[in-house]
Amino acid sequence: MSVLAALTAHYGRLERRHDVAPFGYSSEAIAFGLVLAADGEPVACDDLRLGTRGQGRGQALTVPRSTKRSGIRPPPFFLWDNSRYVLGLGRSAEGGEPAAYAARADAFRVWHERLLAGTEDPGLLTLLRFLQRWTPERFAEPPFSPALLDRTLAFRLAGDSDAAGRPRFLHDRPAARALWEVHAATGNRPDAVCLVTGRTAPVARLHPAIKGVSGARETGASLVSFHQAAFTSHGKRQGDNAPVSEAAAFQYGAALNALLVPGSGCRLRIGDTTTLFWADAAVHGEAAARRVEALVAAVLLPTGPPDRRRDGSDRPDPVRNWAWLDAPSAGRAAALGVEPEVRVHVLGLAPNGPRLSVRFWQVLTAGALLERLTAHWDDLRLEPPAWKRPPAPEALLHALARQGRPETIPPQLAGELMRAILTGDRYPRALLTAVIQRLRAGEPADGPRAALCKAILQREARLHRRGAADPSINPTQGVPVSLDRTESDQAYRLGRLFAVLENAQRAALGQLNASVRDRYYGAASATPASVFPSLLRTTTHHLAALHRDRRTRRLAVWFEREIDEIMRGLDMSLPRQLQPLGQGRFAVGYHHQRHTRKPAPEAADPASQPNPDGADAAPEPEE
Image (cartoon, rainbow, N blue to C red; front, side):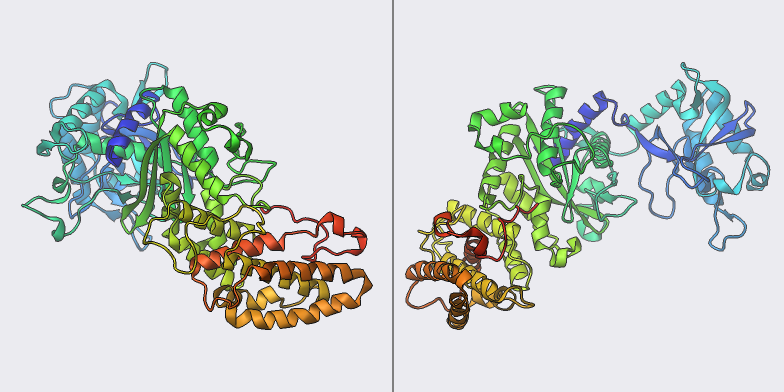
């Protein structure tokens, strides 16, 4: 199913829940309500703005839909608009007297005279009387004030109310709604076969503006647009190039904007990509769809600290622990309370000037999503753990940030990472390159970075195809979760050796301004043959210093045994260069060895034996 078809189907679900406006309508912020007497005279002006001191936005009302306005004669809206159309006045650039917009006021009047011709509704006739009598000179009289300039206005008949006794706007009167629905359904556009629904209907010339995508224009961006002569074919212009009916365009736009509303619970930002997700309620019902959406939100939203939820909700969070991952495949969905056959749609959008780019689009069942998430988290498993709970995709990207600044994350990697997670395909090789660049630039070789390297290598090994190998390593060889002393891979062993040499220096000299890791990690992981001989010679002095102190003699012996055990598995000649996959294995081996503790039977006096890495206790897993 295409993106537009899935969004159009989702609109039906939102309409049944009354979460979107019906076809032909849109939710707009209306700042003022102009109250008209029966003879068309303005008698009051209701301030509908929210907030204090008149600085807030207008009240959200369901009104006849707005459209994109471009060109030299932009069209007016029906029964509401801003002051430049309704009154023919707006704020001037100099800030003095209001600027006149006579052409727009005339367009607003002529438009309503044409649509309301022949109406007998008292409220609509009142509006016609007002428009025919209005002149900009009357703006100086009550109830008008400068606060109305460039703000949106709607109309109300004095004394008119709905069935509940609340004041009713003209666009809510039954006659106005019937008139507008007929106009919205017919329009003045040529008919064509809609590419979304397959039915013949009037084709949309301009598609709706999509608002809420991070980094895109606040006024909205287009998911479908044609704006240059190069996109004109066979005499077709703009929306005629890819015919989508006005009804389908409205529906997909309304559904997309509803998903993008803050607080919808179905959107999140990963890097520069705004990710949207929703479930299909057509087969298994609304309750099942909502449970699946809550599951997807739990696994994709940013990982929070253990004692609270970052999104502020108090719903149970059974996903963010490792226990359910060990459950049998058939029982995972049941353990989480979701129906495995419910379809899930995941859409990634990124800004592209005035338009939007689709970074990824996946349709899969909840059961398939759990399987792929399980594989993803299993690839990330590392001992000691890099996270206290399964990390969200956004948490993985933090390992790529320079000095912890999110804006430095490579923009394309968010979409590529999400696509790999959702499809189960290879992680982008650029992800490994970005991690290695951070390590070589002096960023800490911490658990998250090592886990990312391990996940990329593990999936490469699992999905390896003949002819796509990195010549520096055996790509079919997996990566161990915890320290594996039998692992023969040269890059992995070199990473272990580097960690032992670093720990020996720290044990002998204490904390330094520039340790072995600070000065040599990048060179040791990329060109081992040029660095390790020098490091090994220096380590002999560190071990000698440990031997001279009675309290650290046994520790020196342990270091020597570790070095001997690692060196026995290395080739006689060290690699002159390690390729990126080899540098990733180097990082994993370094992480495993660095957090290894001296075995308890050899530590006769734990109080007098410092830990090999200089810490007093095992480090806590990183959040």
